[in-house]
Length: 80
Length: 150
Image 1 (spheres, rainbow over the protein chains, first blue to last red):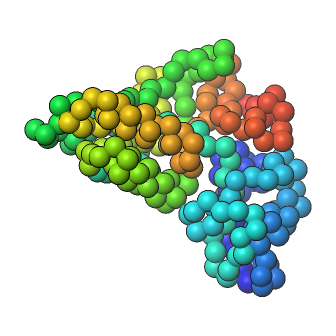
Image 2: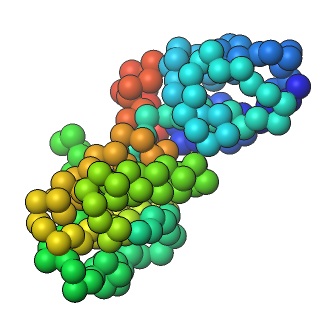
């Protein structure tokens, strides 16, 4: 299955892009996706357990992903 | 009740009018503005960016929560994105309520929840020509390593 990963702000900078596609095995969790992302060049600058959202809602790392999900890796927010 | 991200200056007076009703005895306007110093460093401007679809959803959730908790539908929030200069308003929250106590509580709730939950980021530009994402120092990177020239 394919999951779209969205990156923002400092995380987009360290990975050099704002989005990418991940091919994952059926039943893969957010944790599995993060492991893939963290093996990419530049990703050593990401925190071990970043905030994530699946389909625009904050999610836990044990959340099971589905084909077509949008997984956002959320840097520390700084609105206001 | 309304919450929006905007890419233009925020008209605080228009938001105040939007929450005005004769039933309300208290109207509060919170205006967050770009400050010229942060953590001892001179700031020349801030660029705001967001995960816009999720941020608008979270903003709407927060306004609905405040409306339910503090019993008023007269809450309007706009958060600006893009490049802002010193003194520009990055956020305006207008709240009106029959009584001042609940108006203060609702306004405070909205700004505190926005700072905690809404996926918006800001990159400060400093007088020395560098710039930095605010909050990035909570990642695994040391603070000094997060500074880039721009």
